[in-house]
Length: 393
Ligand code: SDX
Image (cartoon, rainbow, N blue to C red; front, side, top):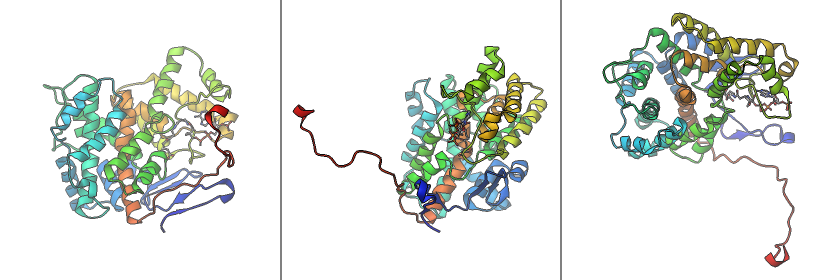
């Protein structure tokens, strides 16, 4: 149970790793965190319970949960010296750039966290510190981008309410989310908490395999997540839906454009490396979006466009034959829109949600004492040849 196995030797190494954290069955649309079906976790767990389950392997009892919550509350504030670094970023800085930079920077103000190993108080403290501070960094990067003062975390609020407070409270008007908004944010984070060996998580494991510390490992995950084919897709879906709405064109125009191989246009939020029938997270989000909009007495024309897009692709041979269905990103942006999160923060929200999965994978790799990751390659370059002097080239 250690190291990588090499499969499909005839088609090159598709090294797979052993993990106990998340199970995904792409054909049957099954996703389980430590054996618990995502549908049950989404319905009955809080995000903090989900973090504890994913990182430590069991649903926490009341004492464990309260201790974890206290640690998250304790670690929410940022070192005052970090304020100066925020003011050094241009206001137009991408929040994902700020997040990856600040995650490494935070470790400079917490001596000893760089030596943490996968067990014991040091790890517990560092895991809580990262889970809590990623929220504060994200909220402050947003406040800085809109030229507003930072809100200090409130230790008496829940994980989600505290984040929304730091995002939206004003000097004389504390933001108190409705239960519908707080529950919708918790659901978003829960559904993003881990997902087997996706691009960003396998990046975290690769960096961790060199025995890099937890901060630099998760900061590398943030960078991998940023790409539009991965975590950047949720914002790209909203951009696509807004373009469709503004264009006045029929949806068929965009479906045909995605099928036209002369361009690289894709329908964002469709397709998945693993799910080939449906992404269970997309199903849960689609149902919840309706509920949240109704609870908030809102409507969103983008939802109608999304539904029509899904309905038409489900009948289209190009999408059916390639098993392209809505993924977690297709409806997640509409949910975030409904609760007032600005589009530039969507991928950052994905990173906040995925933090427990990155931490759990870093810990698992250390527990398994895995060797450094070293993918093999099939060399397709030039055979040996002799050096040519400059005057003869
Ligand atoms: C996430 O791995 C994870 O678990 C990721 C994630 C997680 O929780 O961590 O689930 C989160 O990243 C979800 C994916 C978000 N990305 C997007 O929505 C971007 C749009 N989707 C595509 O870029 C694509 O579907 C991927 C990246 C998701 C999957 O890429 P694959 O499996 O490598 O698919 P492919 O590029 O090999 O495509 C196979 C065929 C190609 O056509 P042909 O060459 O066979 O003619 O399907 C086509 C592709 O052109 N295709 C699409 C398409 N996705 C694939 N055509 C139109 N629109 C699309 N979205």
